[in-house]
Every structure is written in C-alpha cells, then in structure tokens.
Length: 117
Image: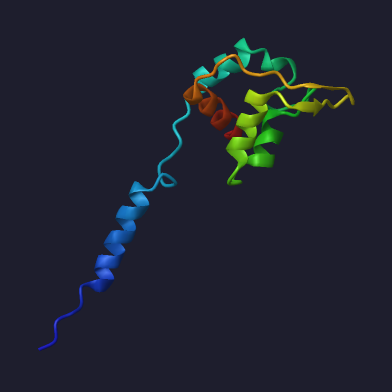
C-alpha cells in the first residue's frame, strides 16, 4: 500500500508561515501624526507640500520617485539627515535643511510617511 507523500502540504505550510513572518508581509506602521509634527516643527512645509510643488518637490512626487526601490527609504533619510546641496525649482541652490531629530525611529517614521504619500 502506498501512502500519500506529505511534502506538497508541508511546502505550502512552510511557505505560508514564512510569508506571514516576513517583514515584507507586515504592513509598515507609520505614526502619521508624529511624522506631520516633525515635518511642521522643522518647517519642511516651507518648501514641500503633500500634493503640490513649492520651492521643492511635493511629497507625492518624492514618493513616486523612491517608493518601492530598495534604497528609496535610505535616499529620503539621507536627504533629511545629511543636508546635501539641492537645486530648487527656481534654479537657486542651497543646502537641504537637516531635521532636528537624531532619533533613528523618528527619522524612519518621517521617511516612511513621505513614501506613503
């Protein structure tokens, strides 16, 4: 008598468990209010608006550029923390403002909030 092999169902079970425990499967928990507060306190609204371009690109445009890219979050973080030289829409160049917070969790939350736009 031949018994059915347990392998197919075992592979399915392992795949389901792996997917459920994967960091990619878990939704990103963004504290929207905290991110908005950091954005406001650092006067980011002077140059950035969620939907329309000001002196800098809209948050929506930033998200479109970086969302889904493996280094997208790191590029947004670099912009907020290292103050690179940027060219504004009016052609002027200046150093990008560095966020006041040095807390990696706060910075990551703001970057994820921007990328969620």
